[in-house]
Length: 432
Ligand code: ATP
Image 1 (cartoon, helix red, strand yellow):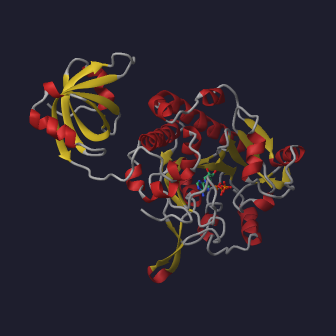
Image 2: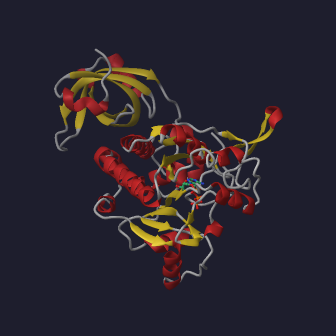
Image 3: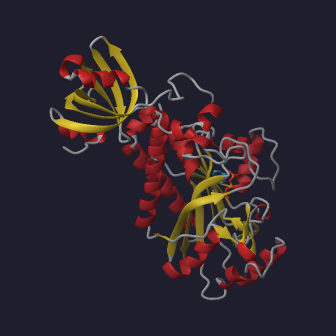
């Protein structure tokens, strides 16, 4: 008999199966022991009756501690009281390795202790659920983009210069070439690739050296950057809205167990699917914020509190579009209807999610792009390859980047982004 996974047990009712995994929890009452087993695909209660197994096996059951690895065979039965829940009536038990003094007990631990033990903490039910939601989000992004005609083209992580200046970059010594920087976005490279494949995206870790200490910033996070030839501002927003709705739909269908463990109220997510996202220009957003009591001034970036204020009564995410060009990077296209602003958007999620996506139409005119590069005090030489893209068959094009962990934080309702990535890197956390 080969190993069966807990997620598949519905097909094996009244049959004997072998499960392999770890002991999550044990509770005994006299000659009956209840073992909660997890195997990565799910959790199940295994009922061991002393009379049903050999004395040797019963001794092993008694020796089995939290997180010991085990192999169990038995008959799958329906839970006597809970619909859709199964139990295993144990026939054979094998202790593979006894875990002694596992440091994380069911009692409360502080976040620093848990983070120091992240390599073990990942096994807890809540962390398991978050990892699985994260995987569904990543799968959804890949599926949606392929449906929309994008293919995956990878961008390098070592880069010679910065997308938006060097202040927020991690320098790395690079052979005889001097200093390389860890990429903060693959965007410029996939802009080159669209002239080959039309629509593409990259998906990988990016690095930000800003000394942010918020619940929404990591120094290493996963970003998906999408870019498409002949996509203009309006279509860019449409693709972004479609992507967010696709992710939510997939999570609602595939993450019911996980949302249950996370005690996530999914009603607000269902409502997001019913309406179009709100759109505000940057100017309208500033006016609205001022009327709501914020002291933000025109020309300033939105802070966390401002994003919260703007979305507090909203059932859908809010696009803030057409920002003042002076606070946005050189590659964003100047709005032909108003040259003080650019054709870009930030998408702010609801429920305190903050900014999820940043996108824009890119400047496709050689002369305008060159003057923006010069105005930003950047080197024409460094960007000569990027300028080439505007020399040889330049086309209108747009793209956007979504932060995976921001999306995981929103979907799971977890407060701190450090739980939304397996091994977080923040300003004061590099281990384990
Ligand atoms: P913020 O203003 O929130 O710091 P940003 O304007 O620097 O974000 P972009 O450079 O536009 O963000 O990056 C695109 C997306 O990447 C963001 O919309 C967000 O989802 C995500 N993101 C950006 N910075 C971080 C970070 N430090 N940690 C996690 N995700 C991030």
